[in-house]
Length: 259
Image 1: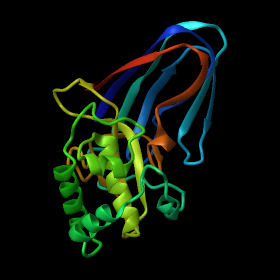
Image 2: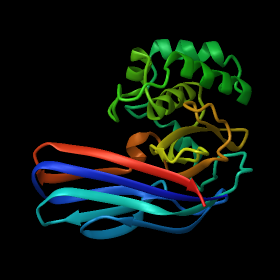
Image 3: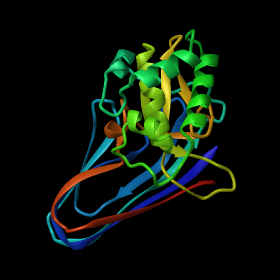
């Protein structure tokens, strides 16, 4: 299935900004699940492309001249395998994804919650845990931010795909299972305006299993992989620093269309 993706991120500043550096992870790679036919990331300034520690494609863009607005546009065509049953394999040791991060820590209440739904480690019980997390932390836009941790989202009982992924990853790590955060896109037929997406994957039985808690999808056959890490901060689409600029505002538009 061929998909066309258009992801635009627009920034505006109340005062001119300058001397900025942007770290951009918005480029999917080809793998056993997907073939990238063409892809381009358009951003002002000088660009350098390399791979990070998780083998994600990482663009560094620097801009010296003053500016009051900036647009980063990623677009291209990716063909995915709709019969994919498992998450993509990598050369990384899965044990890396047991490392604690501030976004994926568990408190006592979360540990008790995980123990309740996963008395034994198997896929069926992990699916039940994913369903329980969505019931306990219903999808609620605009109530959390990228800085919200798994414990905070669980406590306030609201969040989006990023929060669901962090909560699920935190509980899986507590259960002794390597769990990773995946950023990308989700194809939903008859819907063109979406947001960039995130889901979790867990390693056991020598395979990576998909757990898209927000959508209750447990195979990645409608997903496009962009980046993999331990949490959101390893895969953030755009991070950066700048001089001046005053107050920053941002809006983003994503289209994922069959072609």
